[in-house]
Image (tube, rainbow, N blue to C red; front, top):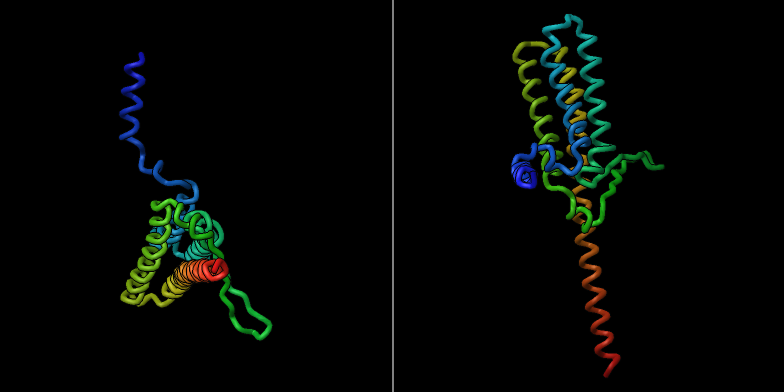
Length: 194
């Protein structure tokens, strides 16, 4: 009986489903679900619906759900980043960014991060390809759907890319300030002893 249990434990270690390697499989699932749902509905809807309005509303609704999930949930959980845009008192658009500290960002699951960034970019590329097909088929109304979905995808790409750059910049500033303060305190203590 012990032999069977040890063989099972040994074999299960090597035959794990790929989903177990993700630190947040539910978040990864929903991160991909609405992207795939919007794309699949847009592609397959012509087979089932003749109404442009239904196709427009459902596809844009799924893309909007994807936008919200990525911006507010999966971005925070999978890559430790969050962004938003505010209008200040002068009427200017101001980007706001939040990120985990560098130590926490370094501990983020690499597979989760990889899934987040690649699906973000692949979805935008897919919408561009579908937009080109709509142009080739002279379906300007479907270009409207693609334009809305592509805009939502690109907004997340731009927001998270700026947020990642801001997080790196903040870390570099923190590191240089820390090093400068250490050097200055070392120099002060060296001269105060003398």
